[in-house]
Length: 120
Image (cartoon, rainbow, N blue to C red; front, side):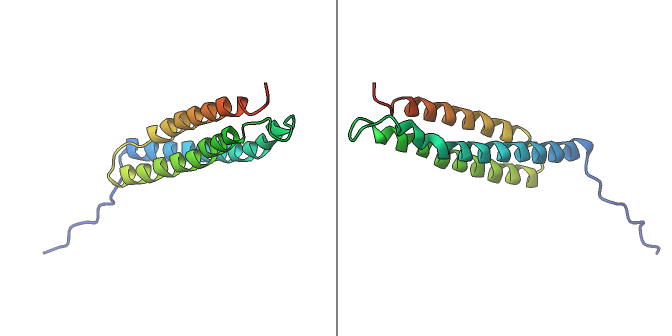
């Protein structure tokens, strides 16, 4: 009995497109996260106008936690969930978009906290 011819296992077009778009969006998202982490290094300059006890440094700490720690956690969670969805053959292109929205919300919350650091 002759052996059946080998048929290559092809991915559907939607899965190839989803993989490419997801990787590209995570590339952009990672650059944005790294840019925001670099930008947060300069937030300490918000305390330049402070005297000895005039500023609320707790708000500066909260801004750092929101932007840096929250942003890294949001990035890692969306990345892990995207990998799980891609392994399960489910579209995952929306996860870096959702992560970007969460990152924008965390950045705006950090900016609101940072605005209260300087003395009135």
